Image 1 (cartoon, rainbow, N blue to C red):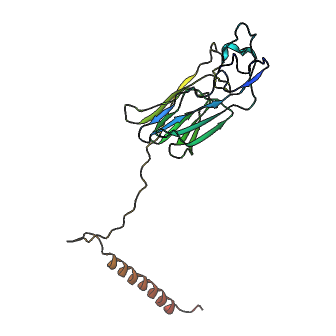
Image 2 (cartoon, rainbow, N blue to C red; image 1 turned 180 degrees about the vertical axis):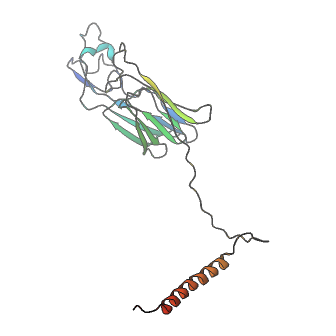
Image 3 (cartoon, rainbow, N blue to C red; image 1 turned 45 degrees about the vertical axis):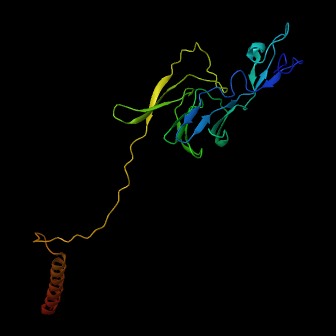
Length: 242
């Protein structure tokens, strides 16, 4: 940090990571019930070129770089969702998302970590294990964290905007672009509990208006015997053909 620029005294191009963006610059989330913090740092290594050095030089950062020549290292950008124990600072789990940077922030609610991504997906991760629960493709860059709350009917919804195009480093391209974004909402339908079959024996006291099951089957057996006997008798009484 005491050098006039990062590869002093050389003025040759250098790969800088993070680039002008990157690192950990998006909003974290904290769950006070589990005492866990959720962070989303990302890599965006860039071939960086220095502007002409004058006087005592320039400090680190974009002020001394020629941003017109900055080129991302191909397929090197990526994001990792990290979960830390707030009491110890130690990592609990991580989830890797290749080929994209990250913007906005994460949201944690009811044991689920919601991770919007500029690849057009929103990732739902288990707060405890980091395993992917579900991934929903929205179809536009997601560079703002979602809001989660119940509506007037008590149904919990996730609401957030989808933006115009962002580059792999997570930078929204072209502030003058007139292509509109859009708002969307997702909800989790209520799932009924599985039906449970309970078998029980009930003794009914008092007169019954139905037919006793035993009586019904006894009568049915007598009727069947009667039909068989009638058939046999009819065969015996039939006159032989002449």
